[in-house]
Amino acid sequence: MILNDLCSYLDSAVPLSFQEGYDNSGLQIGFPENEISSALITVDVTEDVLDEAIRLKCDVIVSHHPLIFGNLKRLSGSDHIQRTIAKAVKNDIAVYSAHTNLDVISNGVSRKMAEKLNLLNIRVLSPLKNRLLKLVTFIPEESLEVVREALFAAGAGVIGNYDRCAFVVNGTGSFRGNSHTDPYVGKKGQDHFEKEIRFETVLFSHLKAKVINALLKSHPYEEVAYDLYPLVNENIEIGLGCVGNFDKPLEEREFLEVISKTFKAGCLRYSGISGKKIGRVALCGGAGISLLNDAIASGADAFVTSDIKYHNFFDAEGNILLVDTGHYESEKFSTEILYELIRKKFPTFALRFSEINTNPINYL
Image (tube, rainbow, N blue to C red; front, side):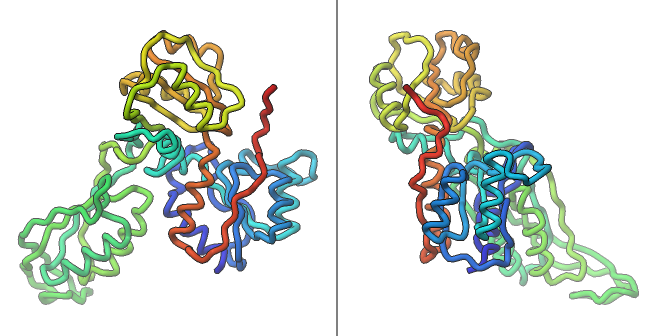
């Protein structure tokens, strides 16, 4: 297949519009029209990973962390990023990354952490806001099914674990076309009344162009009437972090041992032991200390994340057990998410997990 097939799918499955403003997810290196036959999946793109891809004849690397973050002003090989980019270009290896957008999707990094701990009743810790739109349009009765199917196929109508969600009301529409029109029903220059369906559904904002295009193509009218409203509803299945419960609460020391073993942490940093059992756990892959108040508000007994600064441990104030498992350790399972996503869409496409441990931190 061509690289654009893979990129287009990942761009929609892990929407680029979900990434943070500082991020640089998506295709970073490569020509979309190039043929690809196999991919190497990794957390980070390093020179060693590039050498591995060359040895295995993989023509695309799919990573969690982007190779290119800031503005690249030169390509002189003066640092590891420039050398890696140059090696990728020289060997015609594409690089695609899904970073903070992979964090917020419903089956993202934090949920994978929770699943590895066998937590129950998992939900999003900090739901994504201001990303929903409501679409209202008016469809002649005989065209309802055609338009409805087109809108759902474009991704509209998803609410949590439900899809094809909509509301319909019967009514009567009226219009009059001028001398330049070619009306689907009625006659130009005359008032016309038509039995129509008021059709309402919801969509994520990043699907706006795709859904409206589907509406205009499937609707029979020459001029399609529709309204789009921004919604303040939270996306309860999409957002940063997650929280869930153990089947049976654990003693704090036992909990820390489970965390260390599950994430193969070389070193755990944690706040004071209080003697309270751990039954409810909040997690956020990567640097998630900004969600500490959300974790406390959720009723979690412990919050597991990474990159916690010295003074942040004071902020726990005995309200919650704060655990830093390491950045790489908290996101290492992102490769499994990427593998599952790609395998679902392209079951015969060759995929390999990188065997390179890209964690730049060593422990003594």
